[in-house]
Length: 299
Image 1: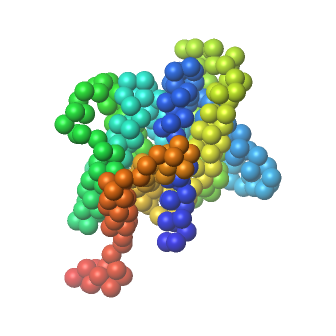
Image 2: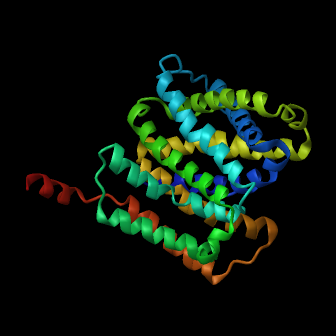
């Protein structure tokens, strides 16, 4: 569990900057340009890592159908929807809506994957989400002032994430974390390349501009390539629900990055939200004691 929590927190630190990068990149290169750029750079760093380790085991045996489905639902479609949403709503609203991913993961697991829900899981999810609201300082009564399109595209992204984590656990559990990360990013790069060719080819002339290039390096190399090694590790060694809890921690890391890089103040509400979110993560991912499991089975 120590390694799992370490991977989860590291992932949240990396993904804490993702919404910022997306906000900066989506206007000049468009939503599909953002998806293609982050998939391209993510694939490149993973190829370098695998080549350095000479670890191509399992590449030829990949279940192509499952890989394509997970690529669509965990990368291509939700990343496009997130980028699209940030043309309509602020990044703070986007990150808040993204934090509902664990809720959808639980519901989808219950409806489509025969997962049983325990009361403390719901309590943990509710506790964490309440912490997100406090941390963000968002007035939920004014949330409808934001674009309806932006809100629904972000919800669509969280639904994709929730479903894809279960698909990964069910169909790709025997595939190495490295191969899942590489194959899904590679397929997503191909899909997004096709969409860029159809919609707007100007990205190919803009991608080498310093501000865009380094933004895509941050979003692709770290936010996609390295982050997805950690993400699929959390799914395989933990559970889809556990991995989805990273969405609770991302706003925290965003606040930390703001304090370190931009010298922004950290208020009491941030600390309160932080404590509630950590409590939610712990309660939601806590497993029943082995003794209780045996007693329930004997009953």
